[in-house]
Length: 529
Image 1: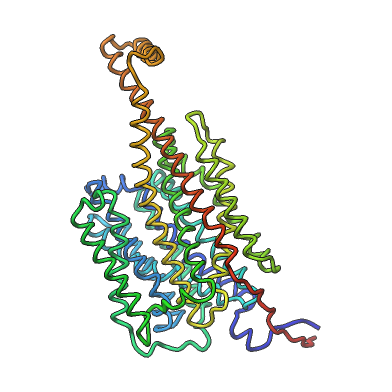
Image 2: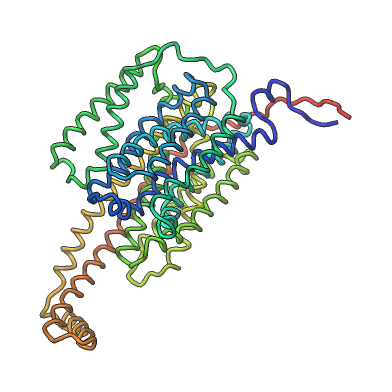
């Protein structure tokens, strides 16, 4: 005697090895997309030197990918229904992989920007489709495990991107941060074509919502540009940023209005108001801020303030990423056993707050060991937040709504991350100016403590063979550098504390989440020899 699933469930949910292959294809594709968001950042200087681009020009390598990526994420559900889930997912992988190859072989700035934009078009289709495919591979009672598996890739990808990018660039050349995608992408495409199947009962859209797509492209692309480039252009002091902000607001307002009222929307925005989606959307945005914001802030903090190298920074973040993986695995098991996701999510929020509080207490004497356990806490806490958030967002969704809701949640998380980086950058600059003025106000060359510090610096430089005049000048510069490092450290502490406060502010929302434990699917018992 053995338990086997009904024919209907086997047809809908792939069993055994087939499910493993489906999930493997999806998680590889999702991680490719997410790693490529951050893998380029550590290699921009090398790319710029190789193709003769300025610092401002080379930033477009990041912006082009981010803009096209965020456009495609919410549209993936529509294209998946239009072309078929397997076809669209496989084509997206091929586009992403081919564009990666051309990026690696690019010889000019225009070439690499063009192919990064195309790479983003392919990559944008991977994230939402991967989540939909993984969720669709499991019956309702195991959807929590599916979300945990997907969340593992979402959390780990952006974290290991800089490490992998630094290693490939230092060991080989910057070309390999793109070329490494080719064999991995080919494997994902093979698995996708052979094991991913179209959603049972899928219905092609009766017509394409061109107006909705147009408004989305206008609104989201300009918003992403503003968030990516605003700080460099001094925000609203730049006429371009001001105009694009107005266009973005117009495009997004028209997009929501059109999609709300049209009969066949490209993105079903009404899903945002269903079930737990309003709360889930807010939590997803904050999750994006914490995930991408800390990945952005921490390298600056330790490299500028403590003198770490990029490779040191990247290697340091690996244990935290592994902690995330372990945490997500445990969360999936807990959710599968019926543990209330609200309890797990609330605990995760408190743990992330603890991480931010500890990081906000750093001092000039802080060492690598001082940050190890806080980042382990970050990994554990964010793993405990991610799975439950995805679970509550998709709870009760069926059919095409799963893909639509997944697209919305992924877009919100991406924009939340971009907005978080921009906002934290503004806050960092502002707090740095405040602390700089405060510290300089306390530095007086007639103060005995200041004179002792200058005398100590001067003696050190005299001891290295410099003349008295040179040693004196160098002593003043060293004092200025000490003040600069000190106010930067305090400003970064403020940023981490802000992240903690924003995370903790989400805790009350957990109490408003509605959760109904899914019923176990129907099974029958059949005899076999």
